[in-house]
Length: 175
Image (cartoon, rainbow, N blue to C red; front, side):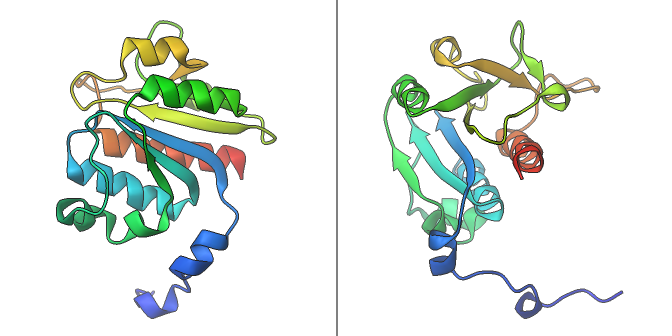
């Protein structure tokens, strides 16, 4: 077995990425403090051709050198928009036909491994602040909550790790 060189990976160009069909999935980042977490979400979103990332509240916007450290240029390929209020984003996405899930531990949340998706529909996921999670008002405007089953002693995962797990699972279910 031989490790592949970057030139052997046959990745598409940034221009080809812009033109490529996207996964019918939008990511909403609400009040994410860490530039490294934001950059990581951009990089994961590039890997799975996410439609768009909405940056809300205190979430920083590109370009930023600290964000670039983890995004590695994905902040220039993945479409993004800044909207101050995440509730407005959720309401608008729902009007556009998206099913919106907040990723949060909540009463009645659906465990990610039990989630069933309709490949003919469009989806959005809301990721909340590293400490406080998704705001209750955003949850109230969402179609539901998704929770990642956890079996250890900690009550949560890092927001960029959570986003990666959820995007990967939704990618498998929508592809």
